[in-house]
Length: 638
Image 1 (cartoon, rainbow, N blue to C red):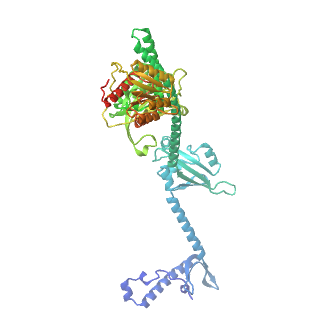
Image 2 (tube, helix red, strand yellow):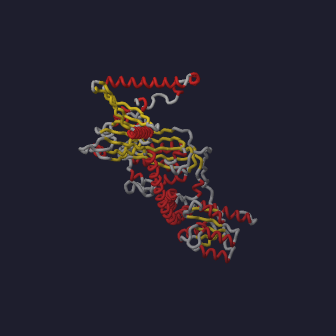
Image 3 (cartoon, one colour):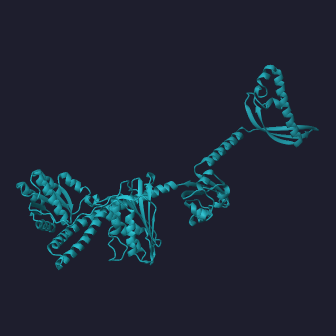
């Protein structure tokens, strides 16, 4: 046998590999077979020439067994003289397993290359000298690095972006895992590397020591880069939401406490203001006692204003105050406040105003808005006392709150808002102070210079107006307060002042009053008697109900407190009207929930008023309801 008998034929395994379809029709099988043998002989001759020239050649071939199985072999051919004749000795080794192993290795390498190229995780490999040898596209994209040269500049093992304790461990050859916080603006300003990214990014970076040599020195490093920016942002948003919830719960608890304080305080103010009003009406303006009474009334009304602030903070102001909210232009109020502040602030303080919008109609109480911005500007001026000068900047802009941006203002609905920013160049505040500034009675001012109710009142007003307030501040860098209110499309309205020059209306009807507070009960009795009414006073709601049930014609009108033990004002109203449906019942409450007026009207009360009572309001309401009752009975009004 010759080598051609055991070697697999080279070239195509089918006749169509050499000949076209028309050739196969014309040529005989014998011709084709001879031609293929000629080609094989020519190939064997070329190989033999190579062996004779180089004396030793190693090449690969395929042998064919007697069963037709192809066997890959490695042939080592050596040429030498034997008995004066040139001979060639060939040794063939079966390399089937070696080829299978090589193919597996190639497949593994291909899979690794695919994983390396298409992995969403950034991967970089470094040699023993900590120089990068390869980096995948995901890593370059993650860092915004355009090419290999810029990645080399990153120099992970000595980069100032890596915390120093981590760098020490890396240089010591340890396997570490750390979080890489990147501010790409800072990266560019420090020329650490070129990047196309902007903003901030957070990367989770484990760096593994791949292996050690005989001297226990690292032979290379395998670093992975996982972008966890969205995860960190979500965690920050969750922490902010949790903090907001805790703050809301704390403010709600403090609000409930403040509401309770206001209720007791109102009971104290009720007789003070009421008796002061009666004294004022009883003395001539030239009488010294008239002036004394006016002073008492003025001081008591200041206390009443403080109670109103507490109620505003606690969001438990009655619905009458809510009804005072009007569609108003806010910019004129801001301008007026700045004019007033110019008179009160030191001349060293510069006042700057920037109005960047023409839309400024909001639904709010104009008096409260005036007080709100006066408070913010006064606080800004106080913060600049130590610096003996500075700048007060007020900026008015509008913006649209998109649904996806609600995490910044979780209490606001999407829509268009007006933002009034009050900025000072004062002492600023730390984070601990910022976390408490909206709490009632918390103040950074010395004793005697502040009540701690100003910013609590601002917070309450904006909450009730469906707005919000935020603050930015750092110690030594001043503070900026942003008051945010929803814009409306309605036309602005003008609040009308009530005419206070008319005489107080009175009468001689029988009025039954019920109040568990003895001082309030006595005041209301004397106040109504001064207006000419016949008054029956009861400190017990149960006793008052018993008297009416026994004698339905006992009174022409009932004036009842809301919060009373055993039988509340709402329950009393319901029971009285069950006994006498035509009897007018009025509710006068020291403090109320947002639904108190609605609940009072639901049970049948004709009107709802708030303590401390204003003598003109209570006289007007009682006379109005008595006249309506007389007209319903077919009698002329008084």
